[in-house]
Length: 112
Length: 112
Image 1 (cartoon, rainbow over the protein chains, first blue to last red):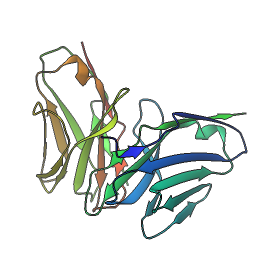
Image 2: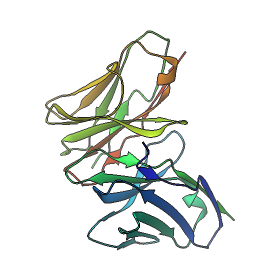
Image 3: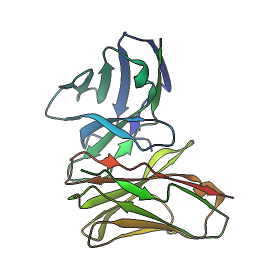
Image 4: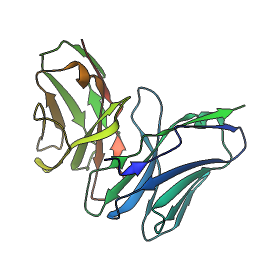
C-alpha cells in the first residue's frame, strides 16, 4: 500500500522559472517529511525537511510547504537551474520511526 | 565528515548464489537502514539496525537478512538470489529518530 504518493511522474520547466513538486500522504501518523534529489546510479541526496509543527521551511532556493489537513506537501525550487534536473523523492516517517516511506519520484527536467 | 560508504559498488551474481553487501555509516551515527530501489517498486524499506539490534523490518522474504556490528557498520545478505533481486541497494545512516537519513551511493546488484 503506497502511503506516499507523487502523482506527477515528470515535470519540465524552463531555466529560471519555478518548479513545483507535489506529494500526498495517507498515513496520519507521519509527522516528519523530507525531500531527496537523486541522480541515476547514485544514492539520494537530502534537500530539505519539515516537521508537522511547521507549515513552511526554506533553505536557499528550496521551500517546502506542508498542509496537514490536506495531507499534502510541496517543494518549490526558485529559480530552477539546469543542475536541478534529477529525480525528486518525497519521503515521510512517523514519530520515533527510522523507516522512511518514499513516493515513486518525479523526474524534473530544466530546459535552457 | 566522511559520508556513508557502501561496498562493493557493482556486483554480478547468478541465480541461486548469495551475496553480502557492506555499509559504513557516518561517524557517530548508530542507526543504519537498508532500502531496495527497483524501477517497478521504487524505494522500498528493507530493515533498520540500531546498536546491533534490528528494530524495524520491511515486507521482504527471509532470504534478505542483515546485521550490525559494534562499530555501527552493517552488512546485508541475500541468499538464493532470484532475477527479481536485481536492484540498487541503498544504505542510509542517521543519528536519532527523525533526524535526517543520509544515503550512501548504493550497490548495483545484477542477477543473471
